[in-house]
Image 1 (spheres, protein in one colour):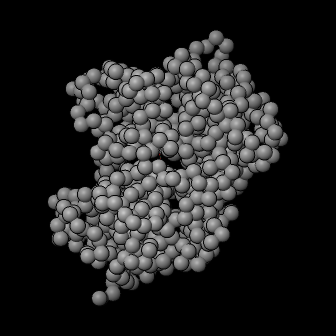
Image 2 (cartoon, helix red, strand yellow):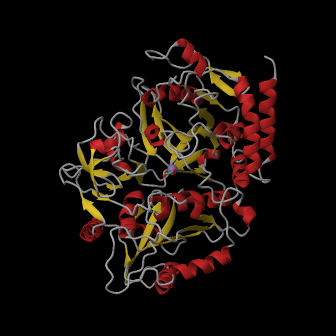
Image 3 (cartoon, protein in one colour):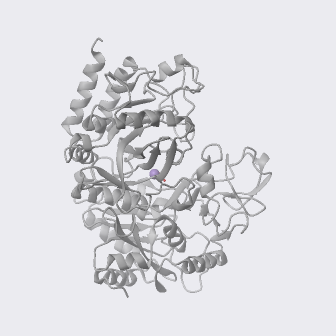
Length: 596
Ligand code: OXD
Ligand code: MN
C-alpha cells in the first residue's frame, strides 16, 4: 500500500471498521480531481459552471440541514474535563472512543473510502505538519486538494514518519441497490471529536466545511494548538499579510478577529495610501515557530481560501473576486441562467432570475436570500492577485506585529499598541466584538473571544493564555512582534461610521509599520500607546478633525465600565487563568482611575 507501516495498519483498521466498497489512495493529480469531479457531476453533487465564465469550476448544494460548523457537537476528549476546560464540550476519551467505534461500524458501506495524505504548510517545511484524512466523501477530497498540499508528494515527504490521523464519514451507508443522494449526511447524528493526547480526529455525520475538511479547524487549530503548547510554538486563528511601503522593506503582520470583522478583506486589501502594498500570505490560520534568530516565523498551513461568499464584491474585496475566476468550488451560492454564480451583494443589482442555493427558481422580487448566508467559495491561494511572494516559502515569514480587534461601535479606539508582550496577551484575552443583525440573538451585545480562538482552542483556555505568556519569555523582548489592538467599527452617537475602513485601514497599518521600524510617534495612555493625531497619516482623508480626535480618544469612563464585564469573562475561563492577567486587569483599572 504505502511505505509507512503506521499508515498501512490504520488504513486496514479503518477499512475493517467502516466496511467501504473500495479503498482509493489519493495521488493529488489533476486527472484524479477531474475524474472525481465528473463522477460528482453524474451523481448530481456538482454542477459544472459555464466553461467560459468560470473555467474548471463547480457549484455544489448541500443538504439544508448541513450548512455550517456544529459547535454543540464538537468535543475535546482530553484525559480530564479540566484539561479541556470550561469553554469546550468534553467527554471521557475511552467512553467516546467506544461510542464512536459503534457509530463508525459499517458506516462507509456502498461507498469508496478515500485516503488523503496532506501537508499543512509547504511540504518539508520545519513549520509544517502532515495529516492523513480518511473520508467517504469525494466532495471532501476535491476541497482538500484546493485547501491543502495533497497527494503523492506528501506521502514521499512523510516516509516512515508520524502523521495526524483524521477520520471522516458522512454517516450515510448505502444498502445494496440503494440510490445515493447529491449531499449525503446524517441528519440525526453528528460528532466532531478531537483526542488531543493521541492527536487524532474523528468526524461523523456532516460533509460541510470545518466539520469535514479536517485539515482546517480540527487539525490546524484544535489539535495543532495542543502540539504548539507541548512544543513551544503558536497555532492561531490569524490572517498573515505582508505590508510594503513605497520605498522600503516588507514587514509581516498576523491578525486575529472574530467573524464578521473583515478578516479576508484585510488579508488582501488594496491600500489607498499611494505606493503602499498589502500582500496575502493567508486569511484564516497562522502557525508560528521561533527561528534561529529568536523571531517568530509564520506559515499559512492552508493552500486555499474557504471564504464566506455573501458580501464579497468588487467593492468590498476586489482581490477575492479576482481570485475566484477559475478552478473553484462554490457551495450553497446561487446560479445564474448563464451558468455562473451569484450571491447577495456580489453585484449592485441582483439578476432577475436565479436558481437559489436549494436548487429552486428564484426571482428578485421574492424577498428570499438566493445564497445561504454561510455559502462558501473554495479557491487556490496562488490565484490571488496579491499573493505574497513568500506564501510558499518553507522558512515562513518573520512576524513583526500581531493585531487583535473586533467590532466595537464605542469605547475602543481605532488603534493602540500594547506596552509589552504580557500586556498584549491581556488585550488578546479580552478581545471583544458586538453582535450585529447578521447574527441571531440580541444586537449590540459585547462578546469576548480570546484571540478569536474560543471555538478552536484544543485545551483549557486558561492554559492557552499561560502558553501565550510563556512564548513571550522564550526570546528577547526586541525579537517579539509588537502587539496592537484595532477597531475599524467606531460609530458616532448618531450611528454614523467614524472611520471609512477598507483600503483606508492602510493609514493604520502605516502607523503600525512606523512603530515597528522605530519612527512612529505615540503617546502613553492608561490603555497603551496611541498615535498622536499628527502621527496618523490623514492626508486627503475624508474624516473631520473632531472625528479623528474621537477615534483616538481614551474613553476612561467607558473603559472603567468594561472592567466588571472583563472580570466576569475571566471568571468564566476558570481557575487556570494566569494570575498575571488578573494583575494586568488590576493595573489597567488603577491607571484608568488615576488623575492625569
Ligand atoms: C471560518 C470560521 O469559517 O472562523 O473561518 O468560522
Ligand atoms: Mn476562521
